[in-house]
Structure formats: C-alpha cells, structure tokens
Picture 1 (cartoon, rainbow, N blue to C red):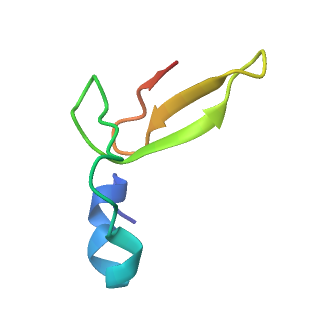
Picture 2: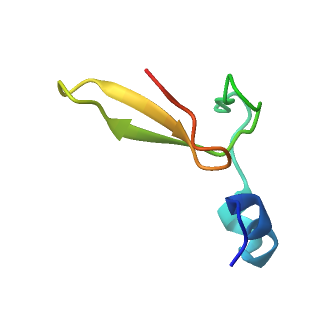
Length: 57
C-alpha cells in the first residue's frame, strides 16, 4: 500500500480525476490539491489534505 494517496492516482479511471477549472483547493502545508472537506467539531467546515494529513479550517 502506498504511503500517500498520490500513489493510487494512476489506478483511478480518467473521469475520476477530472475537475472543473476553478474548483481546486490546495493544502497550505504541502501544496497538494488532494483535499477533503470534513465536518468540524462544532459543525463547521474543515479540510484535510489526503496527501500529507495536514488539517485546517
């Protein structure tokens, strides 16, 4: 198993990695665009980088 989601990107079908332009959110720590939106502790929105694990809101 790869240490990062980046190792799995090559196994995804082409449509799964296509994003509309202007929807990218990059990790402030590593710059990766592999970012997930998650619920925060108080119901707010937070983000987590699936490449490096950095989280922020």
